[in-house]
Length: 253
Image 1: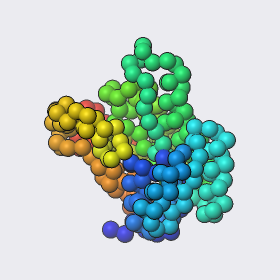
Image 2: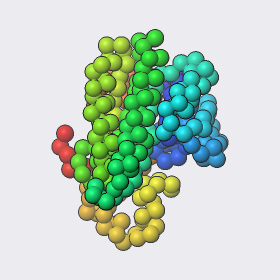
Image 3: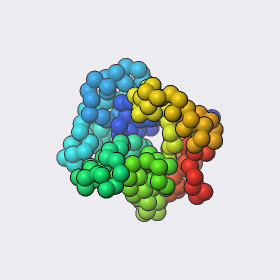
């Protein structure tokens, strides 16, 4: 299927490894021009080499507002525009609510949520100039139910709500906003691979008990849904956050 993404300018935050790199790869394979941003210069350069295609990398601390603004300005200067924004930056911290400092909740919101809000604002202002574009937020099934760490759950729940409200605000300008909520995804640099290496019996039991499909998901399976949502093939999908989880979620909406 031709998704008509050739030469589209795509910006992926947290794109140097894991799901972000998988998403960047999928867009490269569609012929898009891709910008990826992360903190580690080494990881970025390795990703650029592995991805091939038309890829530019940007080193920045995306927790800092001023660095986000400077980074976005560089992307626009280098590419001239932006067609697709993928808010993929994220991570978890802390433990149980009563055992977690408030500062860690604030840090999780800044990493997972406020960075996405800020980049969405920046991108939407550019997209409005040509009355088209797509913004896709990578959240989690644990934004809809408990299961992950409370800091992470709260931030991803906010992101799912934000996706819907921003979608309703921007669709009149030809900009579609949607989200993807992954379940448990395994990749070499991720926590699930680390846990599997440390305690394979425990993790294999988790998979058998908690994931109806009987296995972890892959970054490619997330990326395939993302490129579809970025394309005009999904032109009537607005404000949705799609579970991509092998049936793992307990939610029925």
